[in-house]
Amino acid sequence: MKDMRSEAGSWTWFMLAGIVVFVLLGLHMLIIHMDGILGIFNPAGGSALSWDNVIARSHSGFFAVTYIILLAAVLYHGFYGLRTIIFELGLKKVNQRRWTVTLWIVGIVLFIVGTYAAIAVQSVKVV
Amino acid sequence: MKEQEKRRDIIYYISRFDPERDEGPHVEEYIVHVVPGMTVLDGLHQIKHEQDATLAWRFSCRMGVCGSCAMLVNGKPMLTCNTQILDVSDTALTLAPLPNFEVIRDLVADLNSLFDRHVAVEPYIQRDDKEEMDTPTGQCFQSPHELETFLQFTYCIKCGCCMAACPGVATDREFLGPMALAQAYRYNKDSRDDGQENRNKAVTSPHGVFSCHYAGECSNVCPKGVDPARAIQLMKKELVLGYLKLKPKKKPAKVVGPPMGETKPKVEAPAYTVEQ
Amino acid sequence: MIKEIKRYDSHLGITGWIGGGRWGLERYLYSLHRVTGLGILLFFMIHIFESSIRILGMESWDMVMGIMENPIFKIGEALVIIGFVFHAINGIRLILIELGFAVGKAEEPVYPYKSSINVQRPLAVIMLVICVLLIAAGGYDLLVLGH
Image 1 (cartoon, rainbow over the protein chains, first blue to last red):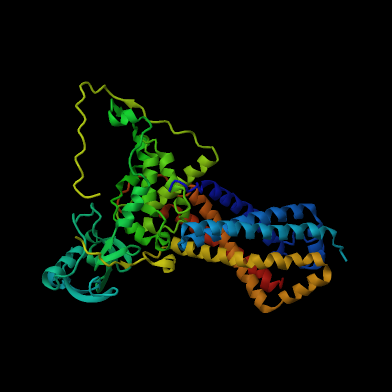
Image 2 (tube, rainbow over the protein chains, first blue to last red):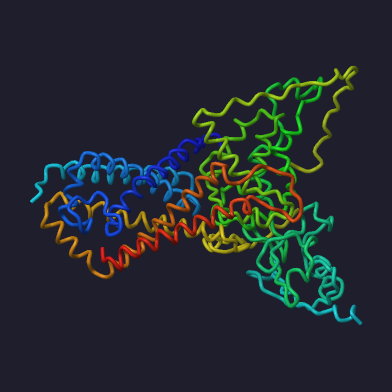
């Protein structure tokens, strides 16, 4: 038992990431799925998923930054939850370490993919 | 007569398992003649005395303070001595040993995993001042307010009902379980105790308190109202505040009271009577 | 000399996540929270790549959006909305509970026992009502307004 590190820190970040996700993903859902009722952040009007709206948001600095923050928070929160569920299915000690490392690597790779997209889209022309 | 009307026959479906003969449990039926006021435990005694002397189960105090007679009654873990038959059902009762443990025989579950988890959280008062602990010179001060913060969790009788109901214990063999975690909180919160750091090594492991996700079954089935779910959530709050360095450091309890005057010599503990 | 006694393992396993004791409301919320969490994670794995298509320009984006008009994806979208709303609202409830705000103080147990479950039950009900309202709003937007 002595070599087990405290989970208190990781769990606190998990909760904080959850709150960040609640706010930012909630905003994202309102933009995308309440576009008929609320119509926020859709400068071209109509569907939130039309190219004009998408490119307008992508070029906005505010959205680029918040998407990257949201991506990091969702990946951390989601993979920590997945790790919790996997651990509860019963794993040997050495496999627990391996799973943690694997999930970190997958998470970081996906983060790089998403961040690259958020930055690369800045140079995409509108038409 | 009114008394005659109230007598009825109830079927007990009991899970039987003989390790020397069976591969797994099977169900056997018994008819029990029930009078109002009979507990499930009384029914089991009737079966053993009148019908089948090979039936095995645990019981002791028959008044709800020892925790021996916990088993699954119609799908819910409860103490059989504390439960009236007619409160559960007036047609049939299904008895099974507590799930999430190994079954030794019939309705007897192997509670060693329960005790191992309990031992892992070091459930005793630890004080920094070793000399004071071994040769006390006074009493520890504890106000009624300090007592109230953990008194509820001292009522645990270690019956195992909460462990049987917990979905975490069902899958994770290393999870400490509601009983051990509630007892860890009980000692952490006790104003006389300084042993949080030692205890928290087991409690904050990946299979400790943070594996609880508030299904709440433990508090629903606890026969003594201990509410382990509450203890666990309160402990998480303490741990998070500790990590964020927002918690004031716990002051050790003062030693007060009149000096003990003539102290009696310390008595050596007797030798173990059971092989270690 | 004690003969090795054969034991029968009665651990419930994954079925213990669904039943196994007493079927309270919080038990179902716990199981649903896990299911929705896993569902959203799975969706998100695909969503990162699908939404990154926008770096290839308007034609690629419109092509992908055309594929998304398929009814199967529309059902998926509805499931994601329901899943996210439940997971988020229940998550807020869990944050309040797991940080010790909605469980009440330790008190002397008096029969019939009232536990922290009773204390947080109004919170759970309010949360479910909010869930239903938000899902209705999202459903209205998806089905009636056709977005």
